[in-house]
Image (cartoon, rainbow, N blue to C red):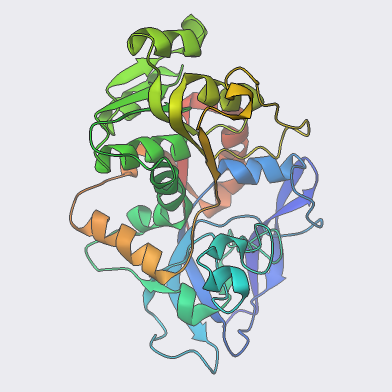
Length: 355
């Protein structure tokens, strides 16, 4: 049995590399998973650019599935060799935030997001699962590793965007940006019964995916002001809700501007790359009094959330795999990451396979 493994790390701000690290041993309540497949997230790109303060040499990644390699002494109900998925958010389920239902804020603001921020991530041949009894979820035989990997972050985050828009049947929602998370938000809004889903996106390949996942209208922001286009599409009424899935001040402001009085803005965009504070346009905010609600959040974690997403995959209600535009072996992880950074060759989501 080897004692070391390959890990994809942030060498320093702006640089990555593959290094050898010791294969970890689990603590009493932890598990070690042998990785079989993973997805690269744009938030990893943000992290490498310096959006999050992490130490040099920290392993990246939070969208990995695999088989249980070793269980801690206190972990029961699972077996070595079992295929499992682990959410990007791994809450303890003991702290006040967890017990109040805010698992992504475990132990403090955004504290449930432990991979890369507080500990090594899981873009490695083996990775640690904290609070394993609550965060390991068996993968049904009928579901592929590729499908299950989308549960780790993209599906749970995108669907939360739709959930926090509090959509009712037949309502109109605008989804700003159709990257992987925005596409999953579009998919979630469709599942929740939105009558009209306006997807804001300029790239043709992502426009096509948005249509495939339930968008009824496409707004190309390169063809004109997206707010004006959405207001024209809705005969000047605006939308019942808007989902910000990009993480830029311009799209956040646009969400406020397109929502009608009493509307909801759901923010799932990662704003860490822009250090400037978000500005609230007072007219779109009704001077603070137009009954608009802003709801933010980081994807909820835990095995129950993963089980629900796996159920949707197993029943055929959803299939996120059309987002997988490229597949790489782990030996080509650097190339895949560079493509995600530059968005080369129409890349949407790259699947990384492990030997």
